[in-house]
Amino acid sequence: MNETASLKVLLVDDEATLREPLAEYLTRQGFLVTAAATAAEARSRLREDKPQIVLLDIMMPGEDGLSLCRHLVESQDIPVILLTAKGEATDRIVGLEIGADDYVVKPFEPRELVARIRSVLRRATRAAIPIAENEVFEFEGWRLDPLKRRLSDPEGAVVAISSAEFRLLLAFLEHPRQVLDRDRLLDMVQGREAHLFDRAVDNQVSRLRRKVEVDSRNPQMIQTVWGGGYMLATDVKRIVLNEDV
Image 1 (tube, rainbow, N blue to C red):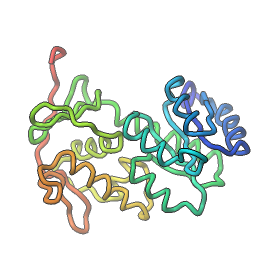
Image 2: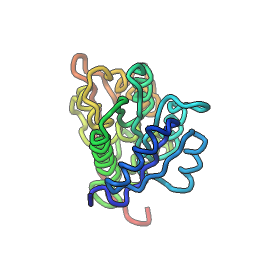
Image 3: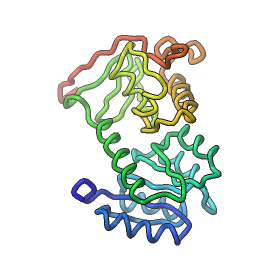
């Protein structure tokens, strides 16, 4: 119970028959739960309640869950677990490709959902904490500040980066010149072990390359290792900045 105490959860699902009992169950598990029936209501709740994780149904009237997921990934630092129906395999893949952290298939055991919430939050917490206070990563003139989640190019300009891209880049920076296969990257970035979603890693790598490579079609830093995965083929420096830097 202590592990979940005071953790804020936003549950977004238009089906009251699922939303209400699930909210009650999560509350009994110690979570602070806010529920929303639509994406519009969820956006309002996000501003008011500042949840630490979002449980998001894909199929909803009006704005669907994938659209809201994309907004969360691109503009908010909040992990997302998708709630999907059995027949929504394509939507699950798309959701993971745009940066959702995990998914559960309806109908599901509430205990499984709680376990996935805890796993995603632990992973997000690990990714959010730099190894040392004020420490940054430097590579090929680029700089990543893990605490601020800020990426700067060699000219010092800040480059927008999504939460999923941040986690992927951080995984590479923490393991430079090491081959990271897709399963390992998927587990580090999204916590999924299913081989069905290798394409989610490939799409995230492609997006990250477009941010940091001079020519994303001929990448020099994030290289493909055929049959193995990907490797950050450059040296990485970890620098502790002075407070006035």
